[in-house]
Image 1 (cartoon, rainbow, N blue to C red):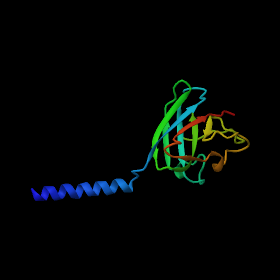
Image 2: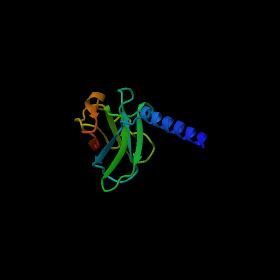
Image 3: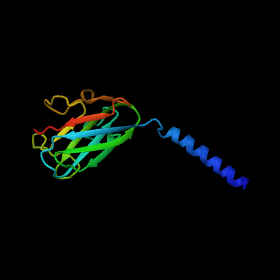
Image 4: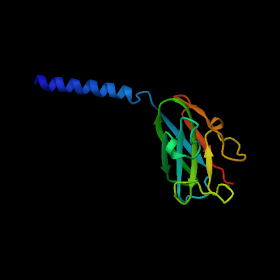
Length: 147
């Protein structure tokens, strides 16, 4: 009986300390994406903590999610530690996991980033899309751009 009690408390304290290390303070983030021209393919979300790889390099992203498109919209829900992030969205119409472009580099598929900056020549900069996610600011609306 004593061994079972010792094992129970050992496991309890191990799990409690593991919870502190793995992000007990995480928040739930909701990202709504609007403006899809069709429901073909998938929507890909990339969450970046740092400028490296933004906006389209999945290997540099903190998180990559894919979702279905319905009625010109989609929604993502995930958990993160509060902080500074940038989000990029791709309407991957042919589900090939990359943005298709013309021979001169113009995107053929819809895209968007957090804070919805005005689109000029080239992709938006990391700082233009950076936002602070916390308990009070955890909902994001991204509107797609098609060129």
